Length: 130
Image 1: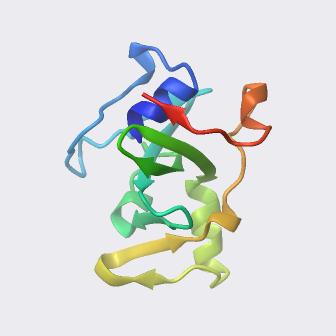
Image 2: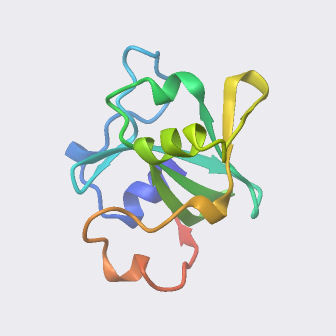
């Protein structure tokens, strides 16, 4: 999903931070889009949730999260949420922690990418194939 998102937004090599396993200290998200460091999360379930570990919300380097849905090279962008918005939802008691210190964000809480997203992101979402 990380590479599909990077391809979707046209991220260059300088905008792809680190795709793969990181430590809490080295995690800088996956892709920089319009100056926002984004951690990309992927699920194979069409109606799946964006899952965010609680320690990720304490990382000031990660400013937002994206949910990609799919598998085997076919992915759809489902939405974006900022770290600040997640914290607000937690404070408002609209999001709860589930197993393994993980917050589950429903797709209805996600929105379009920040700033001036390319026009194709504001239209119907189409699958992106690597």
